[in-house]
Length: 321
Image 1: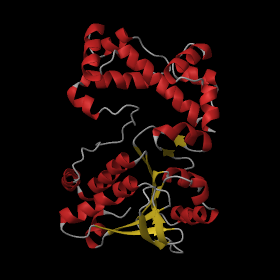
Image 2 (image 1 turned 90 degrees about the vertical axis):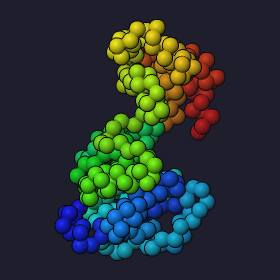
Image 3 (image 1 turned 90 degrees about the horizontal axis):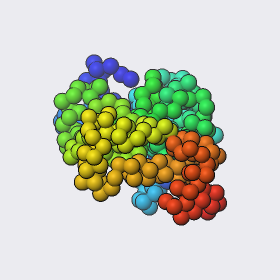
Image 4 (image 1 turned 120 degrees about the horizontal axis):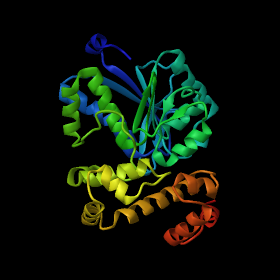
């Protein structure tokens, strides 16, 4: 990326490559922080151009269309942000992948948002890099691209390769870039303008939203984080409570107060929710899913899964095919 001195002379140039079937939130998270930075600074610190493979109207998942310019023959920008969503097989054409590969040769930093990391990976731009995508797709992402190292972090920066796990992590990443380019004060002003409390550094994506819990009941938020981290070998409720400096009874009271359920029941639901995701998003066997979600064996998982979801894993998979 350009240094601070050159940023004072001319705007930092961003190419926003928007593919059809992307979502509006990811697009806004990618561009609006830079718009707000310009407004707060009172000058054009950032400049951008919305691009698409053919140019013209790009239709988003909401049905909204945006006007775009066609890709230039030779990329000329400081940062390329690739926003993608659904139907990646159709949109990640050989021509697009070939165009993307010039970014590496030209020393241009590139960023994948939402489905964007998948397209970058198909172009070979994430080989040998750490990268992330939405946690629901991370298993499939790792299986599809064995030459990259998957990360559950909200966003990942590895050399010229930037990847995010969705719209909110994208907002974190763009605020990080503003902070890096122009300091914490401007980044804070932008975050305040967007009424957003950013993550100061890359952090894990969470299976359960904990922003409210972290402020109202920090021990509950920490207990859930421990549950998420130790799903393969689930600790007892007593062990989870001890890790928070609480008795098991006190932890149960807090869970019932804030989540209207017992910690053991919550943990079981969390594991079964992950088992359902693995059943739908991966080709793992029932035995492997049982191991990854802390069940003693396939039969134990099968009984709990049927009670929770009303059908077997095989029936669920057949239904979704």
